[in-house]
Length: 92
Image 1: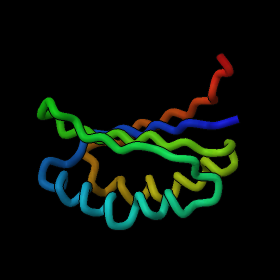
Image 2 (image 1 turned 135 degrees about the horizontal axis):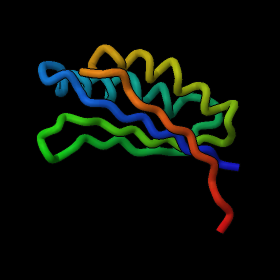
Image 3 (image 1 turned 90 degrees about the horizontal axis):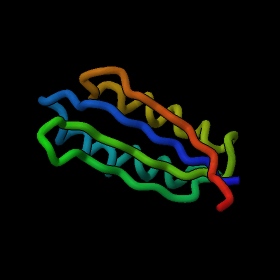
Image 4 (image 1 turned 45 degrees about the vertical axis):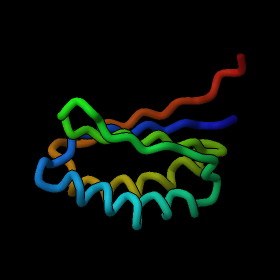
C-alpha cells in the first residue's frame, strides 16, 4: 500500500529562495535516495503567501518515516511550524 506524505509551511520571507536552493541541492536528493521512496513533487505558492508544499509517496508507513529527518532540516526556513499529514492510498 502506497503512503503519501504532505508537508506544508509558510516560508520565512527572507529565506524563501534559500529554501528552494537547499531543497534542490540537499533535501530532495536525500528523499529520493531513501529506501521506499516512490516519488513526489515540490510546490511553491504563486499568490504571494510564500508557502511551500512537499508531497512524497512511499512504499509503506515505515519507509515514510525517512522523511522526518529531511523535513526537520527544512524547519529553519519556515515562518511557522510546518503542518504534516500522512495518507494511505485508496483502491478505487
